[in-house]
Every structure is written in structure tokens, then in C-alpha cells.
Image (cartoon, rainbow, N blue to C red; front, side, top):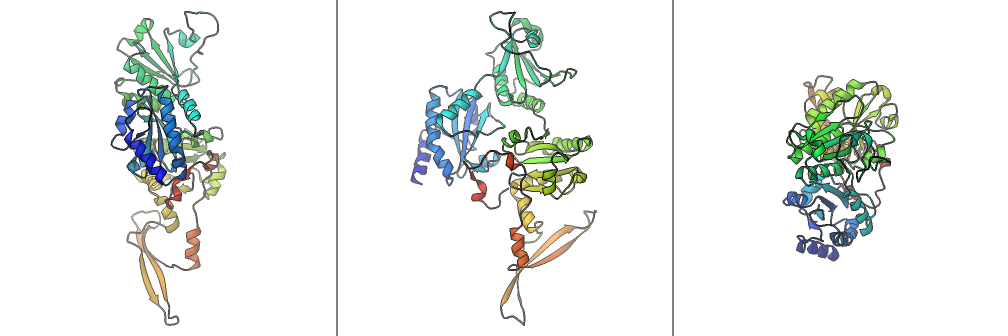
Length: 456
């Protein structure tokens, strides 16, 4: 404990010096994330043994990396989630410690850092993350033939031509020193796994910049038309959101091939299980997400899956292929059913389902039934046969009857708190997560449930 408090004190004293981790809180978050192109952040908790082990390594890494990268390029930060950083832990859906996330241009990247916790490992990871992934070209023909250097026109190009079977983002800029280009470079770093990025500069491409710097999205497919960004390119957030939506679909398909990669993003899955020929349910699912729950995409992953291929998770939900479409949440601890697919058309119900995951209500209600409209009451009933007092839990619950949600009645449930039924209810668990098996090992983490029993 003394070592931990001392480490915290050291953080606070030298927080503003380059080469030492910065304590990031809700109050200074914007400043910290804007002062460096890349900010590597560890989310820790004082009660966590692994967080305490990371502290001296994190200090040493910050000192070593400062010799290679200026503050404008890179800084390391710490969020103390059990202190003044509690709100940031919730904001970025941190539920295990320590969690390490990379921020570029103020935006958090999809994948958490899950590598070794050594100065050398951190250095290699950040070196790769700071690598420029934008392909700079000076002639439109370079997109077709590939990019060469030193004026070479023959031989194998050092950069392969634009692949129309992949998503591509092409920007046109006056030069590589402009702020617009630097913003583009930052976006590319965050989205390099989803799109390939190109930047055309120089006088030979002046005709592409008649109205100023601009960005074009080239979808997959040879016959797919280009899409031009029509907003203010100098507005980073506006431009980033547009590029992000083009590169990363709001609803992605999960397969056996990409399942592990998706789990590495660390976000609970909200999954539509549907038959592949049933495109309408996917369209309806996507439309509701776009109109009601788009703001949740930083807290959950919206996915769709083939009912036939993923019949095993359906089985654990008590469903079969013929029950599809089915919507469920996999929190990597348990799985929870959305009541009925058609309920997504009830305004706010689908969003509330996701909110109930975040609050722990899904887990609580699985054990105890729907939250009561009145607080549970404990009554004492004395019987003539027994001189002892038996405690009875009386729950008053409002429940819907039939298909009409307007018809309801109060149901009083009486349970002897010491009965076998009550004990069995306590032991009952929601279906176990079937996707957590794809996740990397959690042996290096303290899981939030060890401190808070009502975990997601």
C-alpha cells in the first residue's frame, strides 16, 4: 500500500514533465489528448495487484520513450479509476485492470493493448502505431500502376496499386505539412485495419483540388461509385466520423475467422442471429441502430451472425435456427436474450436493453425477476404449530399479460427466504458466454467482478 501511494504521489508531482505519466481525469482529458498525436493510457485501480505491478514499468517506459519521441508526438497517461478517474473508466467501458488503450488525434482506437508489460514491448508496439500508413503519390496513374520513387518508371513499385477489392480513402492536399494532411494521417493510423489510405500531393494533381483539399471514399467493388466528403475538411471530428462510418460498418458480420479479432476490441457483443437469406431482419436491425442506438457504438459491438453457423450459442440461449431472427447480448460473462425481435420497433426498448446491460440490470433481473414497482417487503408470519418466526419475502411486481402491453396485473410473490427454492434461485445463472472462449487470456487482469459482484 505504501508503495502504491508513493507511486501515486510521484505521478502527481511530475505530471506535467515530459517523460513521466500524466494523471488524466475528466477535467483535463481534452487537454491531455490534444497535446500529443498519440497518447497511451493505462486504466488502473489501487486495489488491483496487477495495476500496482504495472506502475514502475509504466514510469520507466514513459522515461525511455521520451528520449525517442517529443511530447507533440507521444505521451503516456494514467487514469485512476478508483479515484478522480472513475467517470473515464465508465466512459471507456473499462471492466478489468489494468486496461491499456491507445488514443490518436483524441480518438480511442478499437483494440486494447494486450501484449507483454515490459518497456521493450511497449516501445515496439508504439513504434508500429506511430508508423505512417498513408501512401503518398504525385500522379493519378500511381493509383493504377503503384508508387515508385526517384522518378523511376520501371521495375516493381514499392507500393502496390490501389486494390478495388478493398475499401480505400483518397485525400488530395496541397502538401504534407498542412494541418489537413496531418489530420488525415491521424485518421489513417486509427483506421488502417479497415481501409487503405492514399494522399495525392503536388502540382500534377492540382485539378483534383480546384475547390481546396478534399477526401474521396472508394468502396469495395469495381462498379461502386466514389463518395466525396462534402463537409468542412478542417473540422477533424466531422471528417473523422465520416471516414469512420465509411470504413467501419455500423453492423459487422461475425464469423469463425474474425471472431477472435472482434473480441480483442473488448466490447460486449450485441448480436442479431439471422438466416443469411433473411436480409430484411438485418436491414431492420441496422435501421434501428442508426436511429436509436448509434451513440452506443463506443460501448458495444453491433454484429450479425449466421443462425446455422452459430447454432451452438443459440442452443445455450434456449433457441434454435427456426427461432431466428434472435437478438442477444454476450457480455463475455453471460448471454442475455432480447425478448422478441419485433420489440425493436417499440421506440426506446432496444436502447434500454443495452442500457440495462451497462447498469447491471440484466444480470440482476435474471436472478430476481423484473425490478418491482414497489420496494420488496419482509413480513413476519407466526404459525400456531411453530413457535418460531419465518421470514417471507413479498415481492410486488407489475407484469404484462398476453400480447397487449396495456393489460397488466399486480402479482404478489411470497418466498420463504430460507427455502430450497430461494437457494436454487440464488445459484441460477444466465447462460454462460459462448464468445468469451475466443478472448485472449485474462490471467493478467483483475476483473471488475472481484470487487463488484453485480458485474455485467
